[in-house]
Image (cartoon, rainbow, N blue to C red; front, top):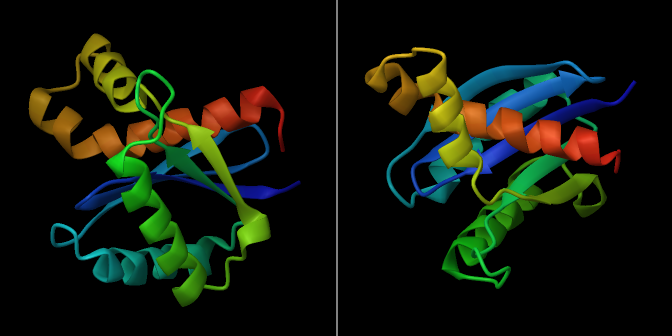
Length: 141
């Protein structure tokens, strides 16, 4: 059974979720200095080395109209750093449309009665969970 790791990449956070099979586990959120992507990737490398994912699913932030915007450029920059600083190869990376995942994550946590502070703290990890669930449900694994 394949091991998966999903990432919700941001300008100062990386939300992480993992799965072996169909059960998705929220992992953690990595925090780094705004736009210091090397710092974030070095912290992510520790998680990759520990979890040894076979497939790395990356949330791809298309614009609402489906076009490519500046956030995709940021994500691709981080993906290139991951390829450069870890043992992950391009063949192991899958890009999944992440439109609305952060908003959905906030709504789910709000519906569950999670406090505003905890929602803010957990939104990136929950978004990574939704990205991984989307990938698994699409059956592209």
